[in-house]
Image (cartoon, rainbow, N blue to C red):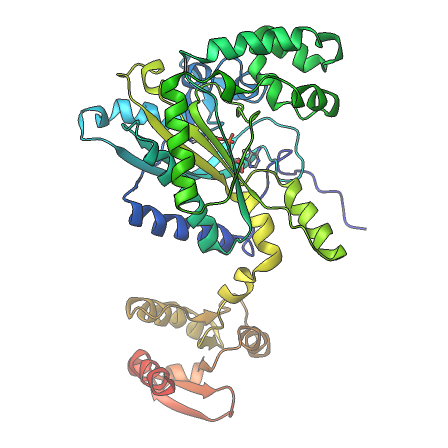
Length: 443
Ligand code: HAM
């Protein structure tokens, strides 16, 4: 029995091991391509932000602010929070870096880790990556569609099919108070049947009850008033146009009249993207799909026309969304072999015998690197030639260079073709040139 591991990564946080890295790289690369196409420029904001921007931005009544923030007091007395989401940080950066005075819209995207103190479960971690796209400065409903298109295209390019958008409008600060009043009076008659969390939500913000996943609460929510019946003319017209664009582009969507999303800054359009449930499927597919569905929304987003003002800027409409990278990878892993194909076999391996040959090998490696050879396998920490050849075999290399004491004295090196076992001796100072020549011949 091995001894018990003394330290583990914090609950809900994971090492990204080499096998998984190509998946992250893939999501990042496809995001970059999509961003370039739609003219979004990349920004990265600090992992820590002043806690106030999330309290004011994400909102005092959101679960994120109430329960999920990792916050700390610095030695200098600042109260900082590990960013639980990206939108308030982007708005802070927009205001701080003079974007307000530039022609609109300002289109920004980001890729990085976020932190929420949540109960870890399928698709829910305490550290996770998001790709976010934010467009600031336009109230046109076409921007809502571009944001949705961006995420759909991103997922499709990564390899997803069968996607469905759930969409709703939650109105604005003109019409939402009417809706809130209707919700309050509806939930009041069910107060004793709601879960303890929802009873608290009732006092703070009855809209948050609509996010509750508790089965009993869900039954009550099913007959609750719907936002769409309370929209003012402006919000109604905006939403109508968004739906018309979706129809025109033949993008599949479902109206979810109780989708409000758990963050306080949303106005008008809110949306989430899921894997669509298949109607006819085998038992295996049912199980696989159920696992995929448990992962939850792959993307969430919406319009936030008041956030810039709330964080100290001018009235600036905006719209955006974020994709959960781990959720996407969880599903991608089952269907794609990205990890395996990316560990490409090497072409060349440098083996050495003896102290001075080992030392000289360091120089030879540098020469190859300067000549822009992508990879030269080596096991410089090993002394035995057999051990080095075992590693070369594993790497499946085509050629091995062998430098021993004798070769070093003669200023030579052996080049051995692995498949045929044929070998020749070449002058040490021409080693890079010779290797490039034989590799070129192969192509
Ligand atoms: P969100 O819905 O909280 O929105 O997160 C967006 C996506 O991040 C989710 O759909 C999910 O895929 C992923 N996600 C969220 N929490 C976790 C978690 N604990 N573990 C793993 N994945 C998670 C936002 O964050 C908004 N800032 C989106 C936005 C941008 N709205 C407008 N602009």
